[in-house]
Image (cartoon, rainbow, N blue to C red; front, side, top):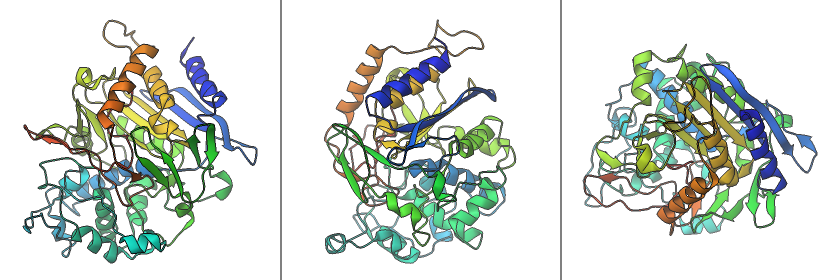
Length: 441
């Protein structure tokens, strides 16, 4: 079977097993469309089929969009990567447990090495009373973030916390408006990403949100909690995308489409296009955490856009060194392999299967060039077998056992991954809003 048949079969099987309700998959190599389909249902209960222009809750797919915006602001001379955060947010001064106040830079925020805590910004009483954290004003959200002790000195560890939310506030301030204003000015409008917004541009195209349970995917409530594969709880907040007054979370608050996102990936592939200088893009795609023996998982570092594959053998991945990837808790995954000029986006309306289940692993593996000795010039061939996939998933499950409960949606309480390792420092696992930080095949 060719790539189209194999990917069709993976989606069909996931749908038949009620693990995925609907999905949009796009695969491009050197700009050539290898696969581009909408499959399944956008809204199962309404009988609405999935369409290519379906709008999804992007969750952490928001992060690389914000990263591109920040790098474009660097190109425009509006900030520097080594700027202290206090240059742009003078009151934002988180402290260490010993009450010292280390300098956090833009670089630290982009790489999740800031040390910012992901603990809830709401008190137990506020949580019990149902206080909506997204309706707190920006200054109050930043104050509460800064009041929590840093997990480590900036640059000495890796933790998946609210760093990109802080970056988003800075980006909005630099254009005299909101984060969406900055994104539109520097990324979305130049690339024609007309549905990439912090609200839904067309509710008739919004994919319903589903969650995996024992008997198959169910329509999410609001909020909706499900056990994750690593011993914790994932809590979704699908109604937030309809709240135009909610805090614009750079960590995961946007909505958008597969075609919009692939436009960004293809701009990255082609050298930055209308939004980034080639040298800036190359820097953004490079490993930016070389001081850590690992960031989110063995064999992985971190770029400004997402996880950066350093050691494929150690990571147990068939991808090439330098591959960038990330995902979104509502059911998404993307990767970009510079060596093959390969861009892949898988967007589904089903979590956690679409971002952490066999569906993700099988789609990604089918899209990868074969491992050494099996690569065919100009072709994509299957590069993994079920036994290898199962062994790899077992390994990742062992790495993440004991992960505490976490909120999955956007940038709420608990948004941190396990600590990266600096030198011989022992990393620890923290609260993890999604297991999209390393292994994905």
